[in-house]
Length: 220
Image 1 (tube, rainbow, N blue to C red):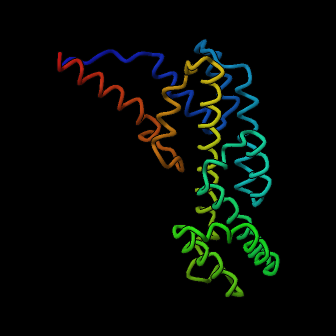
Image 2 (cartoon, rainbow, N blue to C red; image 1 turned 180 degrees about the vertical axis):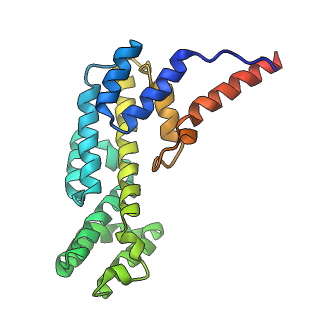
């Protein structure tokens, strides 16, 4: 088997994509300075905005996360009903945990009930509404909806959606050409769950490309 040399640019793109995805601002700046990579002038500003939105979703301020996300890209939630529902559900959970049951019920009727027209949301709605039946929701059969893990999952999904929208926008403004980290970043977006990145997941996109190159080499 003939192994093809790994392109340094591919490695740099994967590393940069990881740092940008996780909003490691200082590390991104240092890495770009060390490697001489080029990025659009507004990438740090976009990263700061995305980081703030992620933190809002994670820190019991889902409505602010929704507002900021819509300001950043109107289509982020418009084209992703699942994500919109999940973010609204976080606010509902916060109201329940704050013992604001009447306000939670009103919010559910106005914001969540329209989703009930579709079967895939109906069961979720029933689970969330079940929280109102318990004085101690954390002891209910659906206590996982109150967990940090669930909130982290929703925040991660929002982060991916914003990053994907930002990437698409940068490609359009670049006359259809992907930026220097385009391939690697999109690979990471398509890989699925971003929670708890490990080196294996982090390098998955690069590994797949390397395997493809090796197959081409062995076939020649």
